[in-house]
Image 1 (cartoon, rainbow, N blue to C red):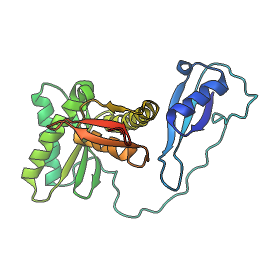
Image 2: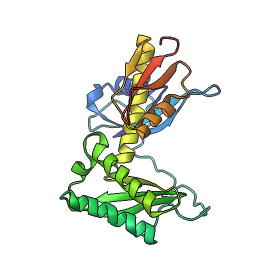
Image 3: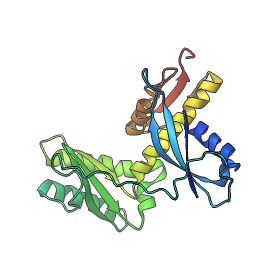
Image 4: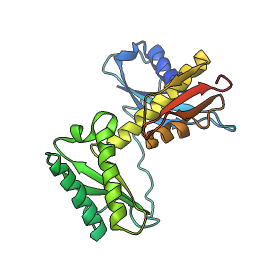
Length: 242
């Protein structure tokens, strides 16, 4: 069965699900459906979907999502050129960059193909399909970051325009982003309870920026980067408890 719960934080929503369903927290799977940050004019909340195979009592007013029909979203007319669409390279620059990344993978000793994931203004997303994706991604995405760094250097030499290359494989970037957002809110709750600070693991600039922006609207929590070099650490601390 599938149920939905809400809370001010992910932890509060999960605690409410466990209490109302009468289950342990490890007795069900959780999917984050919606997250709204708190601001001056609105409160933050998290909406989750709970999946469980265990039989629970439905005596309480628990939203059930399993038997509910979801209305199809209204069709929208395209407002501009499609961001997603043609996976094949469409010009010389794209063909050169795709070929460069494929050669990098081959020189590393692995098989893989590269296709265009999305196109935006001065930004090109590429997707790597490979039976060795886990190795190409690496721990915390460091191998993927290194390949992306080299691809950006190569792209800068091929075009006079400032073009940014984003590499992804197995939807790692999306999964990593969701994981970091959950981590940010969990650490924020811990900081509120302890009135102290928490220093996170070293992260690349994109991951750090995501932590900063996720917690930017919280009135009682602040963040700052510490360290030197590309991989710095983010400290999350209670406001006024530096």
